[in-house]
Length: 284
Image (cartoon, rainbow, N blue to C red; front, side, top):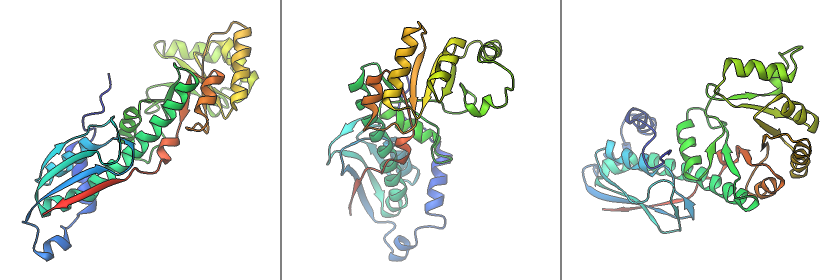
């Protein structure tokens, strides 16, 4: 079982975040002469949200020399005012970690909350529908994006090219004379333990690749009505294949796609989700 309540970034990576924000010290805190003063900081949810990234935020404060305490782990759904974490230490330590930690939690929680909303909508359409997140994250942020999707109750479509077989039209252009059946047979010989997923753009393509033995059909930019047509045609022909929908899936239409027969909803929407607001309170 994947756990979202542990940090997914190493201390080295967290130090890199701090170095980006505080490359040569905190000029304001040091110039004011308050860096050594004792203080306390508290993060609270200002928005309703699915929390994500608090484990990394707590570790950021610890790496700066503060004593930090996690109060709400990733994956929890909270209301405004819910305490997320606290840290005590010098003003210098608290100010050094403050903005990196806050921004990380807000950004991750925005993705997690979006993923949760899409998953909830999909389950209203069918209780077995699963939302899967794409790898269209900001480069360099994949582990945090994966954590956020999982915190929101979704799964990952694929974390990279090395783990799954997904045949696009852009692959098929290079197959020249190979038929769908030949392509599927070649894939099964080379990677017998993998399921074969094929992206299709029409009913005819869906039927051709289903007959050839594809395990999963990924229907690209179909309407819910188009998905229902494919599902009905597959059933009429006795073809058993998992039907997924991709392209423009969001919380507003996920229920319709799941109700139409898509059991896997592939989405990039959480990657563009607005951050959730985190209230930060300092006490001297």
